[in-house]
Length: 139
Length: 231
Image: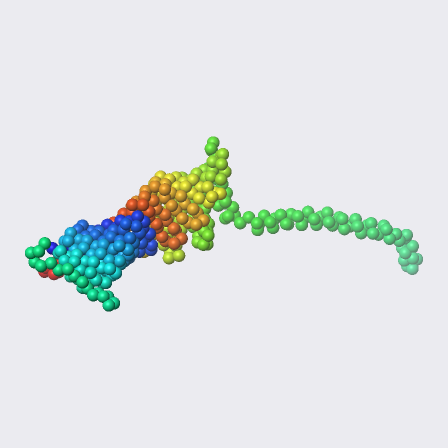
């Protein structure tokens, strides 16, 4: 089962403070920020949300204690993230920690397909990707 | 013949003084006619040039709408046009303006609307059912159905609140009560909001909740794609 952000569905955005620029095509949110759709959520200290002239979600840039979680059990943490809505692609950078189906991994950068759940992780300069994989049947 | 000439010559010549007196009298006689004529000419010239009829009628009509009421002077359909600190033109109009009898500096406005055209040609409007204009502070306190409308290329975005204050010079409107808003891209709500008209910027604070709604046609586009795939 996969759950993903669908830019064609309503998206809830919450925060302590918001600044709407250019008639709302660029929204800066600060303080306990979250962006969510049923079954999936992205939180951070600050987000910049970009939409096109029609109001469609294009890109979200998140910074500060970035957390992503989905009801499928996937969970990601990192320092910064960019979500490309039209490509269903979430790129997380800086102290990345991933939890997927009971397996944990750390890396410097992660590219995650929010539709299929596919992940590509890189260690970054001189660092390695590390993971803790569970045997089948172990729990 | 020569005798006649000599007799005329022998009439006593006017003395110098008498000659000067008679000349003076002639000058005075002329002036007595010329000065009044000159004055009348000046008055006619002034009357023709100084009062273009079209401005006067409009000016007089404005005064026709002024009415003395118990609590002060009331003006119907007032319109105030000015420039903010950045030299951008703006306009404030109202259904009526009532200057209160006890405080000259405060003017009550009924259905006030402020309008400002941004450099991109789009307009920002602020309107309410009631307003109180403080001339000294250059501020309008708005109340009851306050609306801040930001027109844009993709439609209007409207914020609503119960009470707000408009700083005319800085063109900043800040609400003191909850704001809710909607536009083409979705809805918003917050504890309070501030509209910076000059910068096309809105700041929302306190429990901000924004619902981003995709453009309608997206849904149809998907549906039609699905059909073509199916057929």
